[in-house]
Image (cartoon, rainbow, N blue to C red):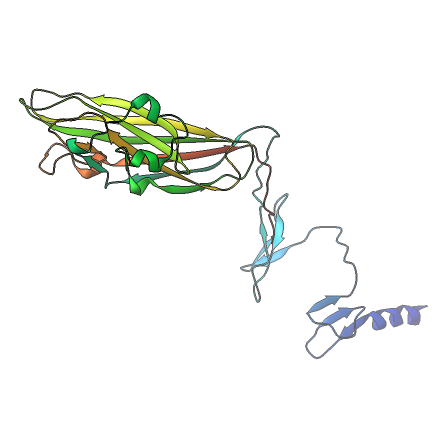
Amino acid sequence: MMKFFLLIIVGSLSINAFSQVGIDTKSPQASLDINGDLGLRKRLFLNNDNKESQGLSEQVLVSQGEGLAPTWKTLRIPIYEPNKFYLIFNDSFSDQTGLRITSGQAVTSNLSTDLVEGTSLETLKTRGFFEIAGLSKNFTVNSTSSKVYFQFETVVQQNNSTSNGEDIKYACGIFVDDLLKSVRINTLFNSTTGGSTFLTHTQIGGATNLTVAEHTVKVACARYTTGTRSLGIGKKADDNIANINEFMAQSSLKVDVYEIPQNFNSIVN
């Protein structure tokens, strides 16, 4: 009986000159080569940086590449509840170039007929709108149920004088794929005390259930009243103005994409 037991061990283990051990294989390819199933009933310890590590609950073993020991990692997989919106993407951008619109560039078209949802940016450019090029950005929608929010903020400014300042009406629009999605009209009022008058323009817009694709957001503005003063949007209206600079006048745009998730990337390659 003892001889039979020893024959089983010898038949199943193969030790070569490099001290490689094979179980059910005569040509082991590693220090321990098992040709079959491996059952582990208790703990598994790793030796990382000469420190034994048994890992934490719900961690997995991850390879670190050839010649390096595997290590324990935690998979950070978010938990999604069905039919609820989640913030999938958000980013913010800024621009210090801005716009300077003179009286001669004022719009003469009709506010109520031109500024409607879906009007193309190209059409409005022919009627006095100018794009803030630095705020043109791409974003992606991954699900058929989505809500995208945009927040545009800038400083609008003119250089007053006691004799020829003016109230200036202007409009700014937010465009998705070159189609108008949000517009705000405001007036920068003159001050007869001289100096520079400015206001902070804040605008929030949105779009619902955009196609599952990459999209582009843009911002463009126009002046609607004539006069003698230049209008600065996101920049100084006059280079000689002393109470504001390009940093203070800069424009910013924030994009938030909320989705009911339906497409998931694999967590492993």
